Image 1 (cartoon, one colour):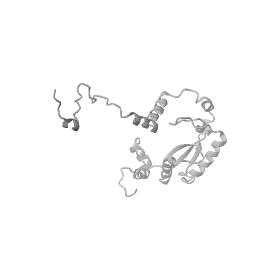
Image 2 (image 1 turned 135 degrees about the vertical axis):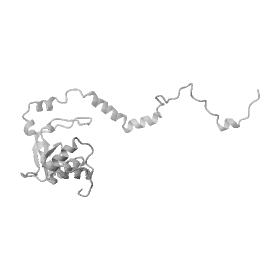
Image 3 (image 1 turned 30 degrees about the vertical axis):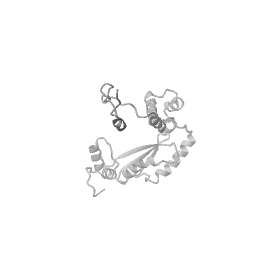
Length: 212
């Protein structure tokens, strides 16, 4: 990254840009100035739905790792409280509700994963691990959401999304192939009046004409 021509001053953004991490961002100039002139603190949240992380979480972990390596302080926010509430998150069904013992076991497993990527401690750039259940458990709406959150009807947008996924499924594609291609639509569709007459086949051109 040190030899790569980058528009950023801060080592962190230069590293992310060189590694292809940056796709969209807000006020990059302000963020670059902040990171180039002082240390910063940033967090990423992880819900404790399993005892380990899948490969999709590697990007977030590496962001925190590079953030710490560049002299900043990362915070790992564990979702001990939000894990208690089912969250579809684009899935067709709500995830399974977990009891407190299962959530704690998952958090212990995830903590071991985080320690392999980050350095935890009391220093200015050491990583910090916090659990949002420490404050969410004190709010009365969390038990309410856990008990009644799945009672309301699913929003129509979710229903449309599921129907859209169904239209793109392999079974729907096979059905469209069996029925043939759809008829042309729109302004380019030929009308019956303007459709040209079919050309005669070579066999018809070779047939002798019949006498009346």
